[in-house]
Length: 474
Length: 116
Image (cartoon, rainbow over all chains, first blue to last red; front, side, top):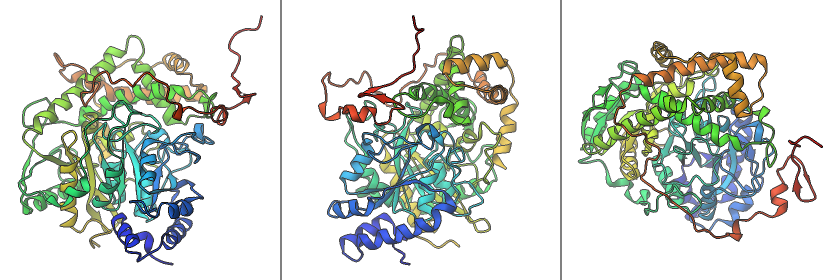
């Protein structure tokens, strides 16, 4: 068996362009890897039988026919799309999402559709109606979620690069737990058209890759205004790939959340302190931003309230978005919703119902504004903020059982920035040699500043050995 | 384990909690058109109570004079051109291809009005 499946996207494109490898060889190695691991890890729900022939047709385009793992909430014309719910068990979309359309126009190929938490409701991939995906780094553990299938596909080299989507943590948290890289763009930077809607004021499709460089290549192919999504910005997106190597010299960096009572002294906090030293050694100016329970200048508003805000806002939007599934025009009846979807639809219906909307929904949107104002003030002093992506390492399979707040607890450190629509990236920043599990460094910046986020992430990745495709940390 | 710590912290607040009764669950399920078994009603009532305790934390936050935030990137009244885009129209076959039941190019729906 060959090893072409272990290549990064940048390496693959280079080798294809130089004719050092062929698409047939590349797909042979990916196919073999998927044949061996898909049953064990439950990564792909559907595979595209036409993948290699489509790749051959696109060989001359910029993305050269490379195989992508696509989260199963992107509508793909003619390829089953379930959002990991039995409601859409047999649904074949009659149109293509803007993101997958742009990727294919640039030469990429949909290799397969990856498992996720059903409707993207969760942070474990354990609420999938098709069973959990297992973490390739250690199959006794969860991959995180909701884009857990895409992160696992990368970690086990079952694709060259991948796409996910994030409402609050769903790209970054599985990337952290699987030791991969996930870029959540600014809300409105990447089109939501043709992505199964979840929390419409939050949903942000974004690239997932083996390296930071890989995520910028995909970002550059998908970012920008789309007339089919009125919330996309008309601003011309930057080419992140071109700015990748500008470094962090002179950058002002704030360290957030590691003084939180539940984070202080943990391996996650330690890894961020180490990351801060790396940035300092590269010429950045780094300082702690103290935590505060109220909105105050030059302090970080506690993430504790974000759990309540997100719970109300997301469930409210879910109850509306999932109202369209009537089992008549497409899909199965509403009785086919899994427990987590039922729970969220009903909670959203409750908090938006007469007599409760002011008490819950409006209040949550007011607290959401506190986070927005907090970031606006902080980004007048800092270029980027860094924190752990998740409070700790991946948890074991079964950890979500009887815990309706699992996702919010694991995502609490990224929820404030998601609620504010900010861009962020998670890159590996720690590793436990006993369990072979990873920690993620979360880097965020102000709206539309993906460039600062990826520049910093690239500098960190290049000067440390946590990324398993670049360094050797074992 | 971090998630355990957070849960303890979150469950401390119980002030001003709505009482989640089975009748509230039944009412909400009916509004949301979600069929539930009695066992599910009981299970969801418990889950609701846990979740609403977390949400109740927001009552301790001072948001006087703070506007609710519904949109994060400052866009305002974005409208598309009011014209038919023929390139995006489905054929009748495409419209019916995922329907539970179709007949002569129409989607068959359940009868919701009483017969005379």
